[in-house]
Amino acid sequence: MQNLLCYAENRKDIAVDDFITLGIRFFTGQGMEIYFRDIQQCPTFDDYKVQVLGKSNAVLKWGVQMLEFCAKKENTNFSEDLYTKIGLVLQIYDDYLNLHSAKYATVRVFCDDLDEGKFTFPMIHGIQSHPNDHRLLDMLKRRPLDMESKKLFVDILESFGSFEYTRRELEKLKIGILTDADSMNMGKNPYLERILEDVLGNLETEIYYDGCD
Image (cartoon, rainbow, N blue to C red; front, top):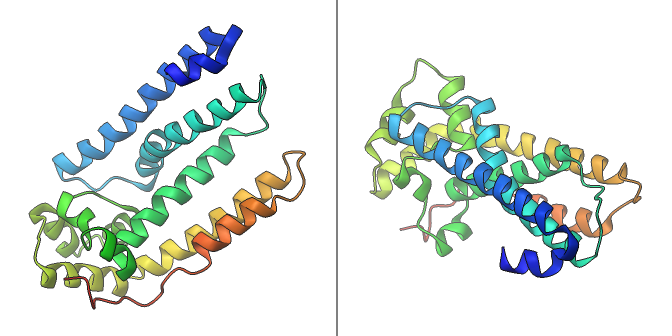
């Protein structure tokens, strides 16, 4: 807030209003995640989207607002739809890596979203696509910490096609982001294309458990 007001100059009222609005959105998104976790109920994909709109998009918009004020711009070409797609990519990508990537596991604890009992994008797909199979939901309720249980959880998601579904959705979002960016009267954006390709172009399709202990 201090940094924002330093650059807002004669737009301080707007900066404060936007900051508070985004702050409420951020904590609402975090609260929704905690709510579904604690009542142990799998959210719908629509619920997940609203949650991400709060958690990821608020932080993203704070950053963009800082850039706008620094640039002395009062208007932005960023559409709400573009914010939504970028925020979803960031969160879904993180959800995917947490359960699937051995490299990610060397930085953080393997499959620690399961430790926390959170409902992430691949989990929601797995639970909703097989409503009569309660193994995933039961394991989420128990929050197992042992590697064998985590491996079983991930193997079930793989057998349900949840990771493949997640990769397809990320590819759709990538195409949508580039299309939206191209229509913002800015032409092609090679920097954005390169970032998205670096992030999403090399998603691991094989699950490696070595080194995840």
